Length: 346
Ligand code: SF4
Ligand code: SF4
Image 1 (spheres, rainbow, N blue to C red):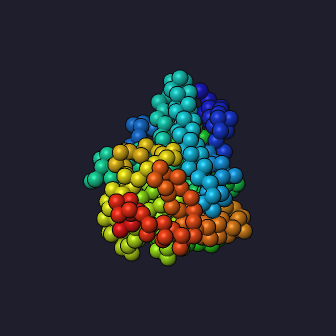
Image 2 (image 1 turned 180 degrees about the vertical axis):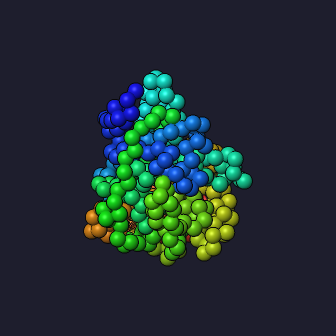
Image 3 (image 1 turned 60 degrees about the horizontal axis):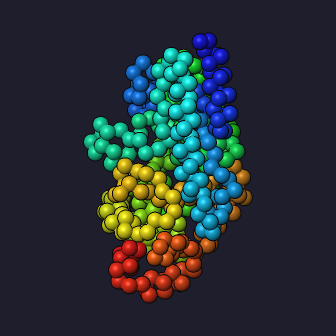
């Protein structure tokens, strides 16, 4: 099929199916990029990729950050699944036109040939690198992809194919609204975003963002094992109250301890199924850095205050969670049986 015509059809298809931004690239536009931009790792003879964003329900962000309503959790799970479904539809469509095409799920599919297998959490390809190179969005300080309309409150998904497609351009740096306000970093209770910049070159173009610290920092917090800030004044949606260490290496040990408690806690709300989590049920309780970022600075500031000034999460015996004041939370923990306490504190 004519390259231009197929490219146009794929872009239209993704928008009609529910995507908000579409980017297209080729092995040429990814040339010289990091290992996770190697399309051939996914499909031998690959020529092109299609990457797209699907926004989360923006109305649910502020109630979530204010710890008033956890509905964004379910929306995140369903939107992520939906984005993977669009990849599947696009790959199926290409396949029917006699091209090879592999859908790449938004998350939780890792390389098995790294030293520690899926524990290394190395993706087959990086949706982010593909997205930034093809103009879906730009890198923010956080390392997330920011879109012009929705900040980083989106999910990314991709398809790799041997069809020849016409690439789209990256967004000019002048349009990147990230002003390094640092609210993403300040809102991260695990200190995942380091002070060091990382630069990658993809297809002859440089892209910059802050280097992440050990991925265990985010896994422990975002994966729901624990969530109380070390000031004990505010928390994520996790009722876990384990002490947070300073060093990267200590976070893996914290993961073992807090995850054992997490597994025993009631899980009333919708979960992701993750191959690396005991009993596979993973309840996202953070993503704060992702949801705080918005094109308008006053909205970012408002979201940050909502997150910080709305207390800490506690849960009852059946897993109903609510936000209470830091003092009330201390009292609730104090009055728990010793067996129940072990589910939440050191
Ligand atoms: S929160 Fe601020 S620093 Fe972080 S990515 Fe967004 S605009 Fe950039
Ligand atoms: S998801 Fe939470 S723990 Fe992970 S980097 Fe973002 S703010 Fe930090």
